[in-house]
Length: 475
Image (tube, rainbow, N blue to C red):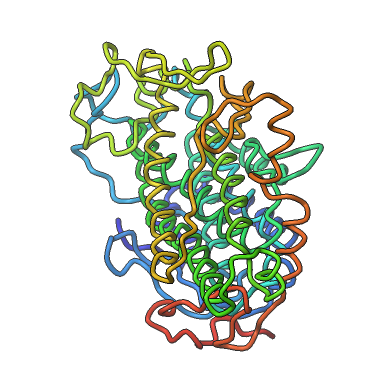
């Protein structure tokens, strides 16, 4: 089934009404979710009419409908891509065998862990961003924030459905816990460190949606290869929605860079103090934000050597990015991969079994993909005749997980002493002063077609609407 049943209390394309026990369990979870949304979702925005897209199909073309909706009334639901009855395992020890429609007992705990960890990231980002609506630079940007938020909420529903449908009482308890943890909480934080960081301003938001949502893309792509077919089908449709989130990040940073370049040319200066006085974000500050968000995000891929990653792959639980396009044997038992190590105070490459290095394989795929967007930001600077170039830092920079967590490394890849790091870290990572300055620029713009001084307007609007369209109506 590709169409979505909106007559049910919970929109779905999984014939939920045919499983009354599951339907009642999810309908019991639903008011708890709505209470979480009201409490931890976008602040002071629940009565606004927002021009949002809602999934009406899982077909590649024409899958979304746009209209005004109040966010608490958004139809969050459960959508899986259609089942392919011919699908076979195409990596790991089960190559050629039928994929699983139910959870194999021997993989139950690990699949539950994978789903819970992915599910925990979805509400976390909503919580991190809940205050941003109060300082949106335009109605266009406010609408994009809310679109990201409601779709992260839907992705939570996707994971909770899998937990309820396939993991019984344990799954229901895990679904409840997803609403009980909160981003940044001292007592009950979110599972992954990046999702406990603050997102205090719109530059941080755009960096988050570019870098951290891109991690989501790569994790979802790896899960879309899974031999557990309901997980693969769920994550494939999530990827359709995730693309807009990365667009919001990339275009947002690009528009900030454009506006800064325009003012640099108007004032004929690259002096950060002069540019800050003119109300735009200087390029070195943008670079420091980039360094932070990139380094925090690549930690999400985990340790560079991981026996869990090897086991997940061999068992068929989680593949590689674009597994089907790779030309090896898809079992990797005789393959090696080069990873970074620290020896005698220097970074060196060592060769390890590829199965144990799959986190690093995915991280390296991510870094190549992320670099392409940074190159497009630099095209904006080049177009305006600005010599400054934004750069992705070395992957050993500011790491907190794995072998590289024990070494201080500059953005250029030079190993440093602790004293050298302390002397220069404020040149490389956003300082309290940087964040206070960026925060001072944040002020809500609510007139259609008007934009804050620190960001350029987009070239086109959403869904072929004009840029000055009333994307949010306040009540």
